[in-house]
Amino acid sequence: MENPIIVDGYAFRIPNIPSRYRANCSREFGIFVTGETKGMNSSRVEKAGLGRGNFVEMAICAIGSRILTFEPNYVNEQFTEIWGIPVSGEMKTYFHEKCSELSTFLIHRQSQDKLKSLIETFSKQVFNTWVAEGMPGSYDEYARSKAAESYFNNIFRFELTPAESRAYGAYYYVAISVRPPNGSLDEAALKAARQIMEAQSQGIVYCVDSRLVENEQMCLGSTSVPEAQALPEASEPVEVPSSSKQIKSAK
Image 1: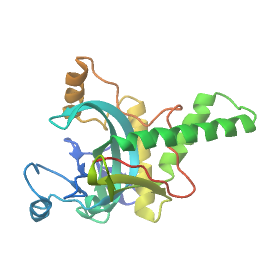
Image 2 (image 1 turned 30 degrees about the vertical axis):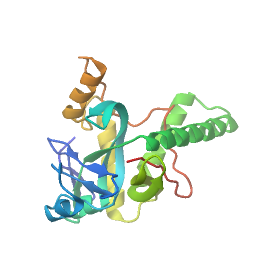
Image 3 (image 1 turned 180 degrees about the horizontal axis):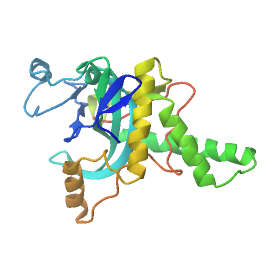
């Protein structure tokens, strides 16, 4: 596969060093950030050009799970790693209208519980449909195909949204919803995302950050090399509902 990926007059870059963003869910922020922002408030982050707005819409390439440590707040915690191609939001507007690049960020805590719930709901729906259609072929292959349809026919929106709780006080969470593609950029990005996923299924790894691999190995006390990130298999497709649903992520 060529880099950049050129689809229908649009170009999509795969960076040599992963383009990683952070969803800063603290009460003072509620935006995606990039670069080194330690010790900076939201005003300084914006003045330094390190803010990337409160939402991003993406064509999803891969979703994976890692055990990571970011001291002092997170020690051996499970995070969900999102990889995709931005088509809207400030992650995208930093690029020419005819291009974008493979990007990634993490979500965690409450978001993972909601994600698992949606996965289970979708799995039941797929299972019922498979049985209703006469149980054609392998269920695993059937479910995997349905999961792929969900990813590569929809744009995913990740938006930091204000909330408040007794446990955390005021904070932001990442709300996740989906929509159908709207325009030639969306369509081209979905085609490029499919190419990246198919390349990974053949062992050509693009959606991996060596810094997180090392972090996870330290957490797990393992020297083995993890498998490539991939879209969830038959047992873990993500639901694409007919109307938008949201997933919450604590700060």
